[in-house]
Length: 125
Image 1: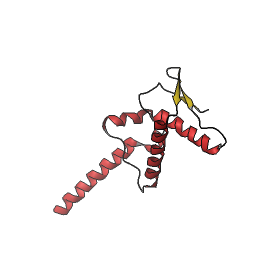
Image 2 (image 1 turned 90 degrees about the horizontal axis):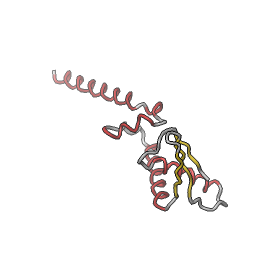
Image 3 (image 1 turned 90 degrees about the vertical axis):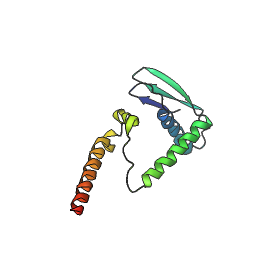
Image 4 (image 1 turned 30 degrees about the vertical axis):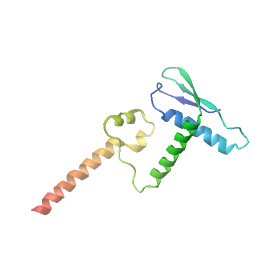
């Protein structure tokens, strides 16, 4: 049975549920003699709470869709742009922050845009 431990508190989004369900799908694929898993648990150290997650067909479908999206993004020649606006707040606690570097990417994009604008102005004159 998959159990996922999280540092923070429980949030109001599905990413933790999808991650746990993906682990269940991996276990089911790796151990085909195992009956389909019905549930797993998320434990949040921040709130000291354990949550049971049922692997309902809707969650399994959403997980498969997320896996397909991740594969499609991985095939792209360039990584996706950093999150903008309110969704950018998610980056703060993301475990991929040291790899993704959204602030640094934004700064480089702004620098390139300023460089292109300067280049365009030079072409005019």
